[in-house]
Image (cartoon, rainbow, N blue to C red; front, side, top):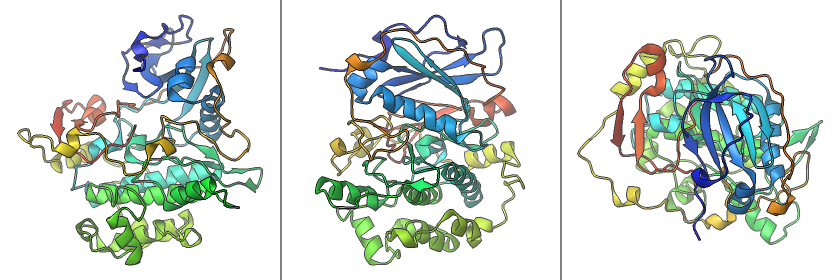
Length: 427
């Protein structure tokens, strides 16, 4: 039986401490996102994620505590210029809502031309901001575990914002560290030890687990590869993928044409970040000392922000080739071809109950809908200061390239065009 569309569920609460000003701008397996403003002002505009709790448990297969952990970790991280800011949360008997920063630039995925990528200076700029955001998150003890272009948003000025903490975990707390055992993430971006850990867990191998922070570093490396090339290096980091198998056997010196497109100066950085031997994998300190990372970039200000938003938008448009006559390929029309058994995965919109080692704010076993609160819970919140993030629908294989990035702030026309794309992984 098909799941009930979110639009046919219970009406949203009436006593919200803000006004909704848009239809749904983003939708996942168990949540929808709308734009909102304060009760009496027209600014600032922020995003609100609405989660139907009973629906999430039944169809999204997550528990109320899992949702609470997403909120706890997001708020625990605090404010950083390259992380979507958490503002407030509330709930009643039916709905839970999360108010957060709204970045009108859309997601980074939509700005990458398939099989081409983006210019090296732009890739370097976004990679620098990504490293800044993820390393800050790690200093707070939080691992994201689902770093990918679809979860990276852009502000109106073109600055990067890390979003979606649905799979985040606390790997360090009060000086104590723990390993994760949840098989989660998106196949092209996950580190190989995540899959190995799942197999070891199934066979009850002692000491099975992976370090969430090191998994994020691997994913950041894959994101950099995608930025520069416009495609992922492999479908999945397993022996079933010949691209990954050759990468391992050649010690990172793959003969694949995609690797030949990369600037020579970035190869050692990628090999260090995507080292299968976890203890030898680059740390963020090593990444920040690498010559490619420290290279001069006219787009980057001293405080790590975009120096020329209009120039950036112009460059990205100039680099984009759109064929309006091109028909989508069979692979683009089909569902994502994942060789891994997706039933064993937990994605940003989890398909299965998420289990992990016990730790503060850790994911518990799945609970039944009957355990949901039956009484309304009131919430008094202070709504946000001026902010700017787009949480667009990520469930389409064909990409809509839109220049809402910068258009509202810099008077560029909002242009929409359909073009071929690399696979978008957001089940």
